[in-house]
Image (cartoon, rainbow, N blue to C red; front, side, top):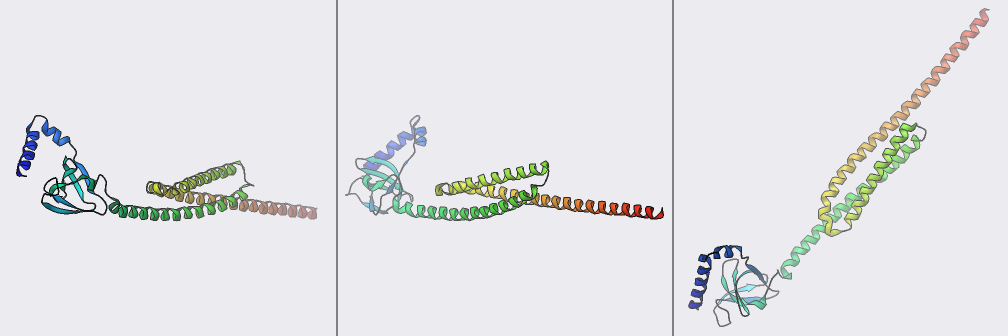
Length: 244
């Protein structure tokens, strides 16, 4: 066994000092293996059951492969213990017993993200319904206004359609749970944009209502002034007739 270790060390030394050997050693990527499901494997100091046991390895133990011989692998543990074991007890990827808790955690996180996004979509839907009602009321009042006010109504309608399209995009994106993490940032930005557009729509509607009220106020004042002037003229004519 000591002769085998000496030969292994000699081969490693020749590889490192041989021209190009150091480059090849640096470029070689060590293979990683894992102890497969529900096993406790004995790590020995040689490739066979007759060699001295070094360590008991549990399921999921990460190993770096150093050498291969027949059905055995020479491996190194994360703590630096080097030994041999049968290759059939290892697999190239982490076993299900290790990965399952990670996958459950990821699934729970995605479900929670989906719940938050659904709440935001509901809030946007409520705001959309309110804006639709406000816009309908504004359109009813704008029917008696001139072409400039009709143009303003058209702009409001375009903005409403834009909000509706963005809402539909958000709803479609929320159906795919796997894509929720990437969609979250987009939804947040869209939500802020929609909120700004909602505030702007509310301000424009208020300005339209104020203009309508001012129009009727001025019209009423004009009618009152004309009536007053007619009364003054009539009274003046009556006085002139009486004086004659």
